[in-house]
Each structure stands twice: as structure tokens, then as C-alpha cells.
Length: 258
Image (cartoon, rainbow, N blue to C red):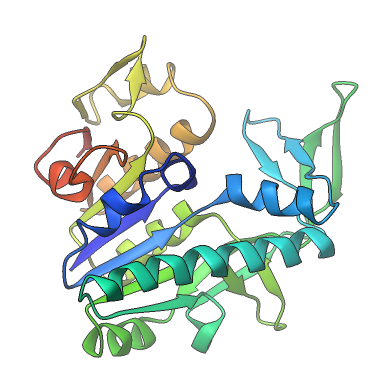
């Protein structure tokens, strides 16, 4: 079983075909696509609202209109990937986390932000959530009847709400629930960069030093990888824009976190 998290930066950067052409039987592919969501929202006349958080991260605020654009875009990406895989002869099925309760999440009732005046305040969480579980029985059923499963980062709450969730969170929970040994995270750079150069390996010994040089989405990816390392999962953060990106990553081309 191969678990791959495909970042939106690869999809919007023209690397989708490289990834699709490298998918083998037994792959779980979790995709993002935030850059495409922003484009669709603007076409719908909905201005994306980007929140700044005290921890240095940013996120898209998901109100009801943004949620509609998010779901439409993510399912478009999902079916695009599935169609390309099937054209290659890879029997693929595409699901959102909503289908058969595949990914459950708890709605974020409140989120802390830094407003335009630089003040810290708390606002309603909208339709964003934190992943709480993966339905392993559903995943096993899908894998036993297909070559590849493609998952969109949309989850369902206990109350039946559709929620925007982080794809890296799904990857983390999927890795643990499905007991995979390796996770490949594909982005648009050659791994974790320090002073513009990729780091070959991150271990417990050098993790804190390297974290000081990372920000934003890459820091979040590295923190996820370090957490998984403690639980026995090896993570490779690699460039999805190169030829044969999955195979290259599994061969150690990128930043190996172990």
C-alpha cells in the first residue's frame, strides 16, 4: 500500500500528469487544490478571505458560499485525477471524505486570528474542521475493489455538516489508521529547504534546528511528518513536478523524515 498526499501547488503548477503517470496499484492518493478553489471563488464573485493565525499559519475562511466553491472544486479535481488514472488502465475510484462516512471531523466552533490591526481575536470557525477519524472498513472495501483510491479533503461531522479539512491532516490520520509504513508528500519544491537548499534527512536530533528555518505550509508538513515518525511512519517530502515523482520520493529523492 502506498499513501500519497498531492499538494495543490503541484496540481496548479502543471505536475498532475507526472503524478498520475507514476501511480501504481495499491495507492491511496489524497489531494489538495486550494489555488484552484480561489480561482473558482473569484469566478463566482466570492472574494476569498485568508485568515492569519497567531502560530504563523494562514487559512481560508470557509463560510457557506466559500464551502460551495470548495466542494465543487475539490470534486472536479478528484474526478479529473480518476479519469486520468482510468485512462491509463489503473482502476480508480474517487471519494470525498463524506462518502460512506470515510473521513469524520469536528467543526471548529471558534478560531483565533490576527486582524488587520494586528490584534488577536476570536471569530466563528465557519465550515472548517479538524479530522477525528478514518473509516478503515470503507478504505479496505474500496482498495479490494480498485487499484487506487483518490480522496478529496472534505469531511463530515457527527451532525452531518460538510466541512473543509486540511489534506495533510487526512494523510496523517490515514497513515495511522491504515498502518502504512511510508507517506509521500508531494509539493512544488525539492523538500524541506534551509537557506534555499533541500535538506536530505530530518531526524529527532536536528528537527528543532530545521523547524526554525521553516514557515507556513512547509512547517506544518514537517510537524506532521515528525509526529508520524514517533509512531513508526517514515515520511518523504518531495517535488511532485519532476518526472516519476512518487518513485523518486520512495527512493529517497527529497527530504526523508525518520
